[in-house]
Image (cartoon, rainbow, N blue to C red; front, side, top):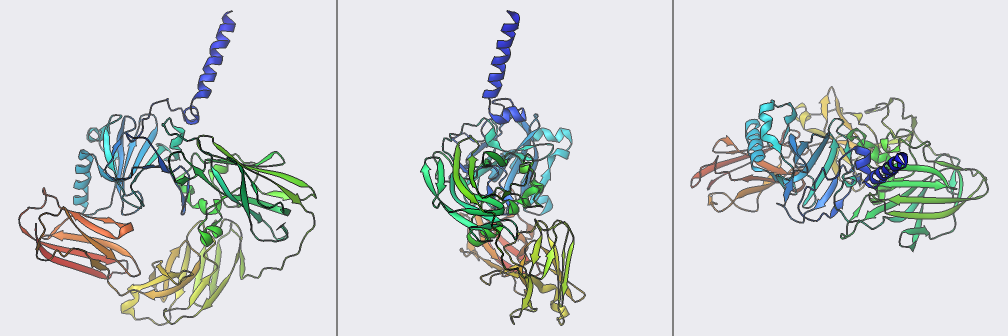
Length: 581
């Protein structure tokens, strides 16, 4: 009887454990340890590991619809880092918790009063808007100022940094490894009963001898909805030969919001055998660049569409794939039908399926040999030199072997030839060195030279550069068309309001728009009455503004403003005026 009673208790305990959210079991976080960072019903505009430009999204985006919403400490903890950036996270706060996790709150409008006062004192001390303060190394008695209890207000939501609309970017990281984990695995009350959508299928020939419907290039297939969560191909024709890879265009849908977000898990089965299986619940920031191999970078470059590949390139080392036994490719080497099934899940295990049949074909087809300049192997260091140019690609710069193309052309608007360094639609894992020779150059203008990339529409973007011994040298992470240009124009400083000789005592701030024509803004410096003042820069809007501070600037007086903006090659723009405040 005692044994039977014990077994019932064990069974009850196991059932209780299995009923808990996945991360509570996987990450040993007690239920209800963390509260929501906001005091309203959460709706999302972004999910964890969502496919973004050049990175995976490292948290969730909580809609706020406006700025100034209260942000709360999700548990007891101590502030370990405060960072303010012109772009990126904008104003961000990091809190370490005793259980080994760190919460991150980004795109904030402002911090709680005691943090706001501290950070402003540091900005004035350093005479710089951007700061990155590591408080974990602060003396223990000073850390008391930065301790917070669960549910304390720590900040107010905003739209700073690279945010494209008011929201709170929220993360959970492992404190020791700094790896972000999926916050939706925590016990937040977010309603999601809606499965992901699958929009289209892409099929790839992965070597020179394979084919999709007789072609050796990527093929796209449109889908139809069979019922709510199930999808099929619009065509019955899919004939595959040789080594083949698949990818799908898929997004997650959420309840009570129109937004489309990222999926959490993908599986591919062929003839009931699991070929591909990965979950997007944790990663390292060191892995960010691998996103450009996880997606079809060429497709994204062409039509701005990010797909999830179900196969892995040789030099893609994403930890998401750690449980996969193969690279996700499949050899269709028999004349028979193959049953293929994709399953896509969100963080709440809502599932969408795509099922179709492909016919295998053993008939090999010969395709024309592709011409190229040189073969670069991804595991090697690769160098390339031609008249006027030197390239050096470090080991592991490419995600797979590259059949490298190179050519030149001329354009009198540049100081060099235009160097066509392969195609811009091929992603790189690392920066490569680029040196361009210039035969004749006015030495007085050598510090104004910049290497520029020229996109398909002729738009120029600066890649910087330093002139040394007849060469302008730089490093870049993009292939494409390059030339040398010169930047001799100063940054522009404009304002919608004329402050000169005006009484502006009713204004809370003054703001300006600063822009540069080519090399980019490097620095800005503002003074009032010959003293440095805190100008904040919103990079996405080119907005530079100063908020009047009664504790530092006397009111009801005339003041002298001086604003200096410098670009990356040393051109200087200035604005000055007298005003009364």
